[in-house]
Length: 458
Image (cartoon, rainbow, N blue to C red; front, side, top):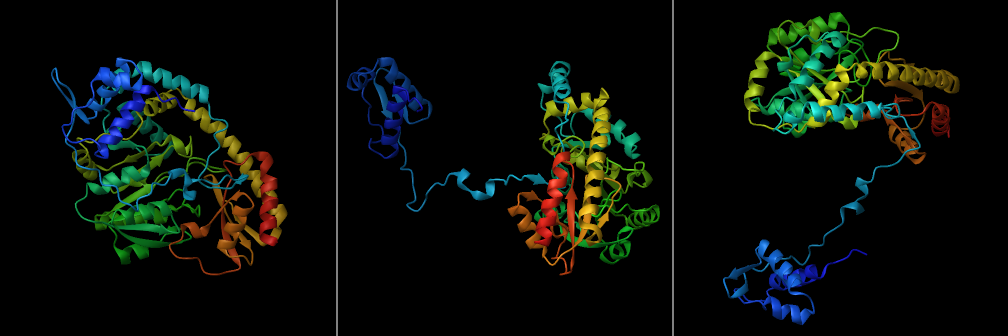
């Protein structure tokens, strides 16, 4: 049981009596000695209660006269108002799954927490002056320099640190960018595509048009018809289909935005891990006309909860952005930002990526092997050469909703193509599942696949 000190009891009782107008305005309260005698407590106990009431503005003092009740209006409390505890809301309780096939997760079991803690301590000692000041909106210059070097040799993105803005998430970066633009913009998004980004733009009041895909990626012909101001695309690893946009389509897209004076938002999400191929150069690396905005994140290479994303802005937009955020304060954790800078600079980031690449390769290959063995000709696997998920086309009489519900009932976290489509996919005997393999343990892969087989066939 929580202990309530005597002075708190006196304070709470007098406060309630004042709020319910048991006292008149400017009425004198009992002296400290009198109330102490009445309550069988020390004078100091009453003094503490009165001082708390005074600090909160319930009472005032007159020199040599004592304590008096402030003139307060009666607090209105509506009869129908009933407070509900937040933890009774079932939507706030996240389901716990036995097997996670989610495309949104990573495996953090191998994360070098000791090394990270070392860099956190080092950040405190090295950047204590910087962390004692209000952080600049773009994020620490040291981290932006590290990111500039990293994406230069990894993604072919050649830029200055001043062009980089680091924030706690892609949504924050895009929200701020579009607030700097005077008018509502027409934004094209791939369909199927990243549903959260689509919702973000809709919630911001922007006009969103959905662009279909073909075997080369998003349709430039549809862009020419719709004439959007911004085109959001994932050319190096289309999300969620995994299509790699070939050079012919990249040049076609770049030429169109250049001729029309429009912009591309290149989302390079989930393109770090490659299997059997070298890294695919970014679209940004081909741009010679300041038409591409580059988005990157550490969500999949480190962990989603770290909340560190970045954006590279071309100069025509950078000036407006800097002007609009001149007095803004970043929501980025400074200690995480400096620790990440040291993590990259020390070479530990690259070591971790190499280690995780080996682990994810092993998981992926085992998944593909067991799926082929168990489902045989009933499935088609889109064996993507990048990322932490792949697509699985499967023959079934079940609807998308039935598959999702049965997976949930059997403690499997599973998503389907329906999540990424603007409209409900057409009813067909073939359903497309999004199979994420990052979080699941090696020993759980076969049991998870057997459970999925049971769901599909029973």
